[in-house]
Image (cartoon, rainbow, N blue to C red; front, side):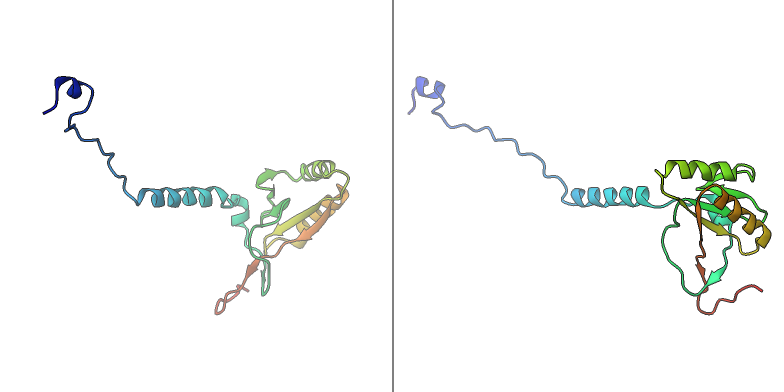
Length: 154
C-alpha cells in the first residue's frame, strides 16, 4: 500500500486522460490550394477594354494569338478613337502620342493600330499621319482569323 506522502508526491496512479485535439479534415489544404489558384487566375486574367471588343477587325488566315500589344490605338467604324482603353478625341490624338514619345526615354515608340474592317481608308490614313507627325512609328494589328467552315461577310 502507498503512503499518503507517496500519493501526494505523485507516485499514485493518475486516471485523468490527456485531451486529444480533434483531427482536421484532410481535404481542407486541398480546398485552400484550389481557392488560391482560382484567385490567381482571376487576377492574372487580361481584361479587354470595351472599345477593343466592339471592333470587327479584318480577317486573316494567320495571326498572333494572346494579348493585344500596347500601346494600342483602336479606331471604330464611326472613327471613335481609344488609346489603351481610354477614349480620346481626334484633336487629342497627336498630343497623346507625343506624350508617349516623351515617356519612351529617347526611343521612338511603336503605336499598334487596331482598325475596324469597315473603317474608311481616309480615316486610317489620317490617324497614321497624326501618329507619325507626333514622333511615333506604327504597326497595324490584324487578329481575327476565319474558322473552318465560317464564311466571311462580303
